[in-house]
Image (tube, rainbow, N blue to C red; front, side, top):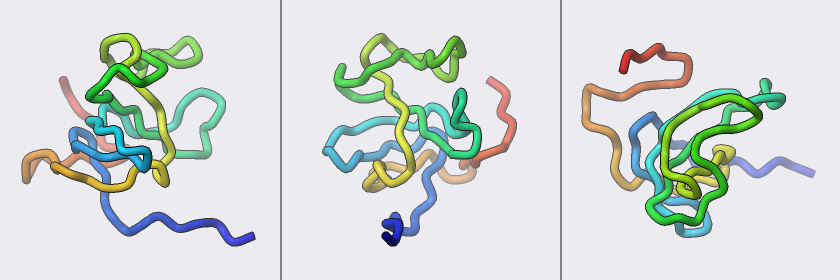
Length: 99
């Protein structure tokens, strides 16, 4: 079976996105997690308390949000970027940031 391709769009740290199920979120983490080191995951802070995490996964802290407001998703689950992070402040996978 052919793998479904996601639409070409850049999803960056700080972007506001809509998931395929309609939930809105802010991208708070992009990278590998735990045992899935060959896949890129997106850690999202959901607008509503409909998530399953606070940014902690398999004994590691990836991002911070209130309990139940976080979720990790694969790229195909992101439907669209509804509000990109401010121009000139785009961050990409693998880029080091200082908080």
